[in-house]
Amino acid sequence: MTPDFPAWAGSFAVQVQRLRASTGTTLHQFELLFSAWIPHWRLAQQDEGEHSRNRRWNLRLTFWTFLWQVAQAGASCREAIRQAQALCRTQGSRLPPDENCPYCEARAKLPLECLRQIHDGVVIDADAAIATKDLWCGRRVKVADGCTVTAPDTAANQKQYPQQSVQKAGCGYPILRILALLSLATGLLTAWAVGPWRQSEMALLLQNLWENLQAGDVLLADRGFCNWGLLALCFQHKVDAVFRVKGSRRKDFRRGKRLSRHERLVQWKKPKQPATTMTAEQWASLPEILTLRHGSLRAKDPRLSHQEGDCGHHAARLAGISTLRFEPALLPPLGYGADPAQHQNHPPDGSLEL
Image 1 (cartoon, rainbow, N blue to C red):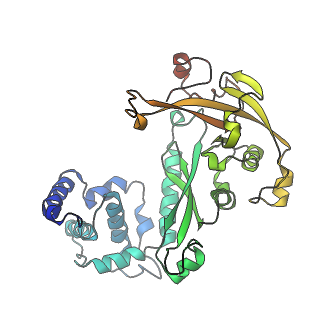
Image 2: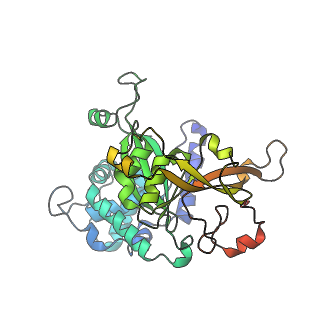
């Protein structure tokens, strides 16, 4: 468990086991907690293919054991198997074997389509349970963000997700780029797309995830998504966008119509060079000029406190661009939330301390 400090391994392992035994939930409790969100029929025995035979590691037992193991930080396969054996004892079922190999093989054969259906069902049920107070100004906010991960070094993975070109063959791992949409109302990851690391997050969004954005949604993302083409496409499909501003534009508050001290209406002209992530037809259908809200706010970061003699929070000014219309009766300034009390506690200059 602690290979770098073998002398501590025994005592540390005992403490971890005591902590998990006193605070962690059992597999039986875990299944009871989440079974309301995952119908029993979704984990029924498959008609053909993997998990079509009623083995000791059947689909239902494998799924709940794997889900429990993922939810327990650092839980080993041996711990997961013991939890599965305890669950089978309470249900009077045949116990799965003690070895790790059968469980790992069953886990690797979980049908992806079944997992996708379970995920989509949970997302739909969670969206149906959203209350109005959970929305921002009555709008659903979707956050877009991405990352890269490595995959097992197999020939199939290297072909589909090649490693970096600067690495010699056999000296690197396949690299995947993942882009996901996260719902701020439910906290769930609603959709995702996977591609090679050379593919940009913008391309993944437009080619794979665009259909998950509906009219009236608000797309929130970092400055990597801030370009004229995506803003215009959002405006065209009635999807509002709020992005961090990149480049020299984030500090230029001399242009446009003044709305407040830190917020202006600006116009961005259509670039002469078409975006590589769009077709010629899509680019030609976009408007020539966009009227956008350019604002900034003060954000306090507690992680940067007590640095260089600072006794308080470090404040940084963040600049953003948005397609949200400036209608005070409908939407607040960019620097405020939906609560009207925030407007009373802060000066009307478009700034906000977070």
